[in-house]
Length: 323
Image (cartoon, rainbow, N blue to C red; front, top):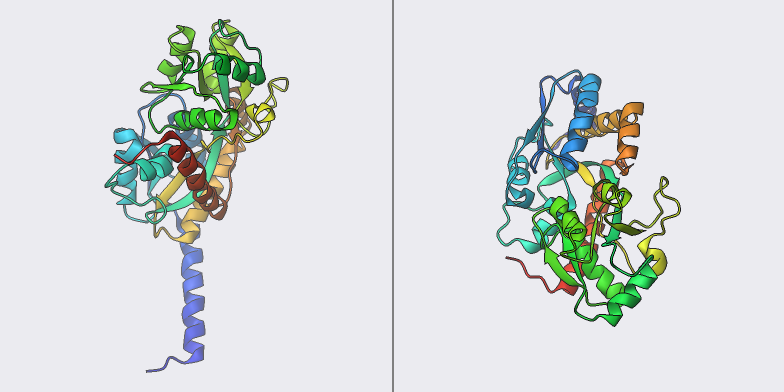
């Protein structure tokens, strides 16, 4: 049976009205933000800083729920299986969405198919620090020193397959060095390993390293991002000394289950962006060296896709295999 043109037009118009009504009515109950790590600094802090602002904007409770375990896979899987209605949202990092896919066999979700990107909220500025005993005041001098001590210089990371493990491998590739990787369970112990002299250097968020640098327990040699950090304009980027170096992305972003209606995704994205525009939030994020992104769902999807290529290259260089 053929459908008449007027009926088709009416159906499309009705769908548009329904989506518009959905955007205006959402949310009608509490929204749960699943943070797939334990409470603490980093992604959990960002979720909790933005939650009250989003609650004021949306008129419904924003409940932050930590579901840690499995390097973020447990919480991420829970959101992937949730109803795609906008009431369960994931606050994630690339380790949960990208490296987990590349390094974990039988992972219970497909990041590119099971999630609807909302927005990458922030990206922390990250840094390269060394123990005070290291005879280098910049990246060029560090590379020269490493090459004079082949196989004797080690770097700490927050774990095998973590962004900072990948940073070390990409540094080796760009510099032609042979830094030895020493994994720790998380960023704080990796930073303290440098302070204690267990390893010579590490890569970590500025918010993690700056207290040790200010106390004279570590020396800051460079910023890992493409551009210099505005609050530290005299600190060069690693890429200025190593033109072939590119840090893998390390955003903190929101994702909903695949199939979540477009108007709901747009409403969530707008609420996050509005929350980050609050003066007290911006000041707090600036103090913690968190660069605000707040991109569109389409831009975030493209960012995730391009991130797979960067991480895949680093994983290949590191010789890692899925486990």
